[in-house]
Length: 64
Image 1: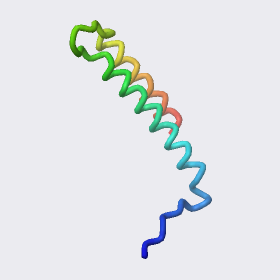
Image 2 (image 1 turned 180 degrees about the vertical axis):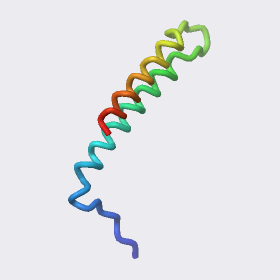
Image 3 (image 1 turned 135 degrees about the horizontal axis):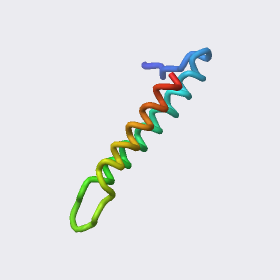
Image 4 (image 1 turned 135 degrees about the vertical axis):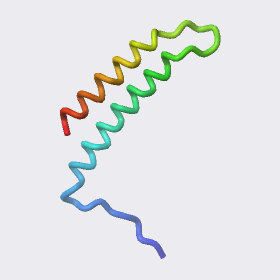
């Protein structure tokens, strides 16, 4: 039988912070992808999505 992996108690705060940062980067990535042209809809300019992603990456890196 396999036992489920359990996060050590002293690392739980760091893991939660990492998950929050990863979620912010993922949301910025999704925003960037929404700027890409698909079909007949005029999306936001791609540089807007790139700026958003770059700003979010800088913010997350500053927190590390």
